[in-house]
Every structure is written in structure tokens, then in C-alpha cells.
Length: 119
Image (cartoon, rainbow, N blue to C red; front, side, top):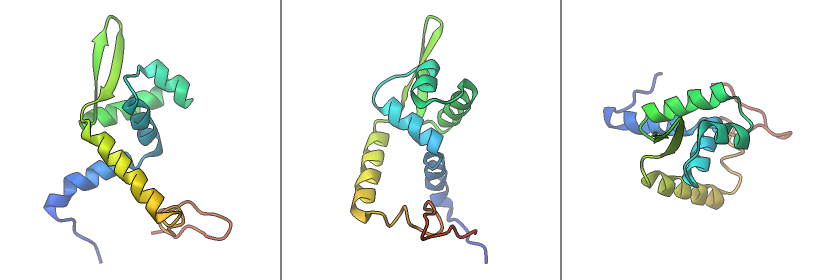
């Protein structure tokens, strides 16, 4: 049986999907501490330039980050300060649930005592 997403939930689903990618989340966490250039992100996150650029384009398309040009450099920053509140709230939920989310058989990371369920 297919689950139909209520129309009002579609934007939230898209937001959380964009935050669900480890690379995009790492980029957002880094940019949350201040502007960064692609070269900064590639060095700090040890990712390829093409990977960082691809994920920044996605985050720009979602309206979560934008950039300003200074000479030949582009500096990326968060567009919405509320995103910091969302990330902080997520960290509080994770702290409160302990390892329950990490051990989730569907979305968590498998450990020696658990295995991932394919859905």
C-alpha cells in the first residue's frame, strides 16, 4: 500500500530530504559557523571540488544557502538563520533519544548486533 503525502507536507519532506544527505548536512554545519568558499569546504571536509559544488547547487536550489561574489571568489552563507534553530533542535532530539535513532532498523547505521532492513 502506497502512502500518499498530504500536499501541505511536501515542502517539509523536501527540506528534510535535503538535510538527510551526509555531505549536505556537513556543508550546512560548516557554513553555519561562517561564510566559506568552495576551496575552504573541499579542504575542511576532504571532499572533491565537484562534490562540494554539486551539493552547494542543491542547497542553493532549495533556498538554504546563497553566495556573494568578491572579486573572483564566491562566499557561501546560510540564507535563513532559522536553519540554525532547526539544526540545534535536531541535536537536542538526538541527545534526548540517545542511540534510538542511530539504532533504528530502517534508517540507522547497522552495527554488529543489528542489520539494516531493506524497504
